[in-house]
Image 1 (spheres, rainbow, N blue to C red):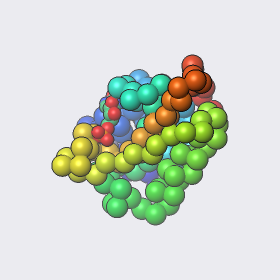
Image 2 (tube, protein in one colour; image 1 turned 120 degrees about the horizontal axis):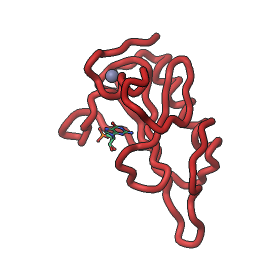
Image 3 (cartoon, rainbow, N blue to C red; image 1 turned 180 degrees about the vertical axis):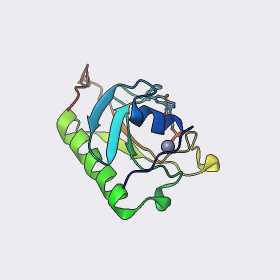
Image 4 (tube, rainbow, N blue to C red; image 1 turned 90 degrees about the horizontal axis):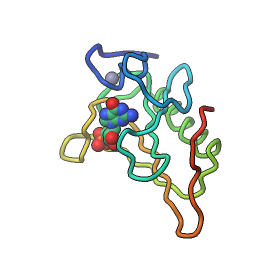
Length: 119
Ligand code: 5GP
Ligand code: ZN
């Protein structure tokens, strides 16, 4: 299922009304680079279903987002990374459209991928 909110910035990114560096898109999910990366390659994965919090998502949208997280990790070849997902202002959620952060963890001796590719 897809559902959009007209004045949501992440819904606008999905619809192409705000530009983004897209990594991967499916019928139900969309992933792109974070504009304020915590590490090189910091990505966001969002459902094409506007809800504020993770527990408000239909099961199929939640599943699709997590499958996309797996595809991103495999496709970009990262081995060390954190998945982060904030719900609610007190828990540091700034954008009120569910999103999962994929944050590659750099190692000391080996640089991360220089450029992420669109899959
Ligand atoms: P939160 O704190 O809500 O979990 O994370 C929101 C994330 O969205 C932040 O890491 C921030 O850098 C990112 N972000 C906010 N606005 C935009 C935008 O317009 N484009 C992109 N690519 N990322 C954004
Ligand atoms: Zn939205």
